[in-house]
Length: 109
Image (cartoon, rainbow, N blue to C red; front, side, top):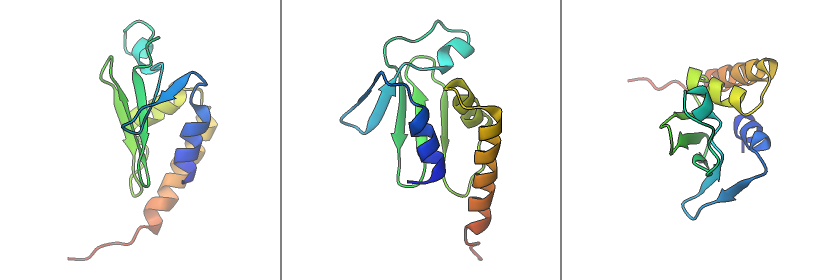
């Protein structure tokens, strides 16, 4: 597990459940920020993959994720902010993704 995955899992709320498909479900933080009412039915889901993660809200349709070699997208930065990560910590994770991207081998044609 890398730093990005660990940071995400550390911030997930205690009220959550693990599904048979590998998703960790919890109350989606995105709905309220996207003009919906607050979710209280565990409709936000995170799936940790081999090197990255995927987030999907099964209520408002918001999606975010990250894989090595990519920088943090706006949606992913918003997700981290909505689950309680400080701007400073998001910046540190963004720098870590830049380092991981630079360490990726370049494929030549």
